[in-house]
Amino acid sequence: MSALPVRRRWTGLPPAAGAAVMASGIISVGLSLTGHDLLSLVALAVAGALWLVLAADFATRLVGDRGRFRAEADTPPALNAVAATTVLGARLSQLGWQGAAALLLALAAALWPGLLYAVLRHWPRHRLPGTAFLVCVATQGLAVLAAELSDADHRTWLGRAALVCFALGLLLYAAALARFDLREVTGGAGDHWVAGGALSISALAGSKLTASPEWTGAGHDALRSLTLVALCASLAWYAVLLTAELRSPRPGYDIRRWSTVFPLGMTATACLSAAAPTGAGWLRPVGEVLLWIAVAAWILTFAAFLTTRLGEDPRSP
Image 1 (cartoon, rainbow, N blue to C red):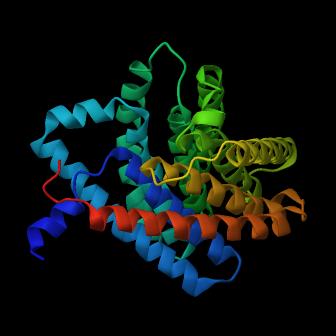
Image 2: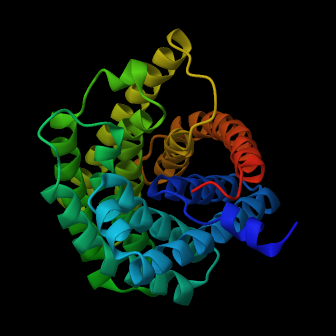
Image 3: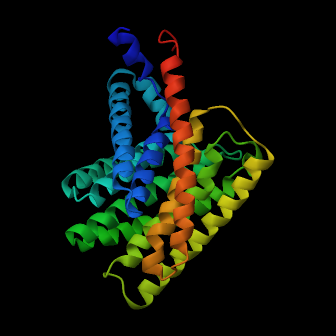
């Protein structure tokens, strides 16, 4: 098999493929929190490799195919670039690689304003699919990584920036929810799960802020309450979406299924992370159970993804 067909199989991926990095990265975080370090590093390696492929694709389109780049930058899946970068950065920070994590935060923060503005400016007036919630996910991704680095490097300004992103992310979630097409719950192709996943990453950001010694008194209590509310709401979404999947099965691989795996992993990780700082110890066993569900979904989706890419005709566009 020549190098050209192999390369063509792994280029031209749509922005929705960024959710594969997000799913792999957050499952790596969750596995690390439960002591499964080797499995965590495997998931991290997959996330890192996919991120490099997508970053190269992103740069190629920016330089050589500006028309396609502009068309895709106007759509919510473009924000996967920001979210994927922050999730990968959060795992690297967890490993103690603060320099690399800070570099990824700077990159994500540079991409975020332009992409967010383009997406909001081109939001259609009709009801929106689950990808609309990526405006929240990308913003909360910045909050999570900024809060991680604030604690690791004792930089209070990063903690304050994380708090601003956390608050803005909640507002953006409300805006997306008001436009969300509820018919997606029973008919969506996978990205409808982001309706719950956006609350889960909000809860994860809240848990990082709650755990920080920077916030005390009434501020700490408010963060704890918001974290628990967001997490309980995400668990409610989880139950609703899972019930809908069981009642209306949607078999077959679709790249948007990575946007199902990511919320599964994010909800598990948010439970694991929030248990200690919120004092809700019951969240940890819930998170452990949900994590293995997410790992199973990740394995199945990754296998289908590889089969699709390797079986695809390299001459196809």
